[in-house]
Length: 440
Ligand code: UDP
View 1 (spheres, helix red, strand yellow):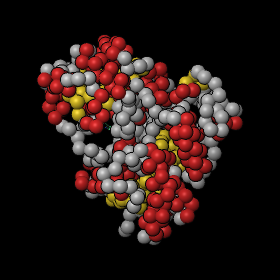
View 2 (tube, helix red, strand yellow):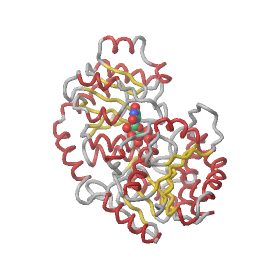
View 3 (cartoon, protein in one colour):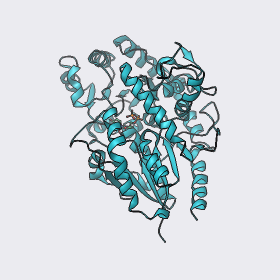
View 4 (tube, protein in one colour):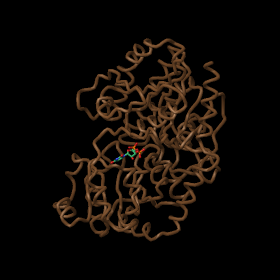
């Protein structure tokens, strides 16, 4: 008998493709066939190391070869080029073969094709925390109550309780407030479009956990749309190959084995953009060097121009640190030599740190990272927030974290609670059963 097919459409960034791949593998383990659809430029990057349990498809995106597009270039490809190619692709299937399409909420362009034109049951996917989803979902409420203007500009300053169940966040930390005034307006429009299109979604699957409020929020049951926190989505063990956009530099793993337990600072600001200007980069480099602790720093070669003179040679020669372009992050975080993680608080990085019980020194910069940081620092109390990247801030932050044994204890119980009896895997199972019934 033919297996029912689930088509999954991630947003084309590493932090989105990895959880979508995990979700696809989870569907495979439940007897579905999974097909992941990506823009061609990403498909080419990862196809070398294909994951044979999942079918990977690249759609024409109109991008140049070897491109590293920014948010707006990707948006333009997704809005203008990819819809007609998705339409052609879906025409190849018999209508009843595809029982579900899962669309990343940052790729809402696809909803119009899958749910709109083809009428296929479509679920949204939010690869991050339930709280950050609720913050976006509350935009209409924020507009209605004039907390923000029609273009998304906060009308007050300071910390605000935007969503009753959510901890307070600063008005500067709203996810669309990045870059120039023009860019902020465009990002706000992007979220408005996403919300409009999301009306067609039957379910929203969230890579978060449905535990007690002290750990995370309860799912909302606002309208006919079901918001299901089915995470953290763990890949079934037999399907553990993660596809990276870049080649991992494994040399740091060997270096780690020669370091003392809990001594190493791991520094990574995720996969997405060059996170900082030259002066911050310089300060961070000087702080790491002055802290006299071994470190591994993920820094693309094209971003290294702003480093202090002779920095790379000094740290390498003295064996104090390693600077790599792309690290085997989960393997590093698993290592007992690593004592803390300087992070931008991306949700995948946060989950990985919690899983391997590493304390976090947080420097959120964009999107959902601010909300994640509030949970890490104020609710779970397993990390500290850096106010700046001055030498002093970083040195002090590292020292405080490394000495805090209570955080270590909290980390052990936190992950046990997250993965506890009430975990998202059960919710996923009941979702799958519902889906199979609908399809029979
Ligand atoms: N990652 C990695 N090697 C690196 C940097 C990042 O494997 O050198 C992985 C990391 O383990 C995580 C993902 O890339 O799974 C980044 O996702 P996250 O949500 O933390 O941040 P984003 O890149 O989306 O901002």
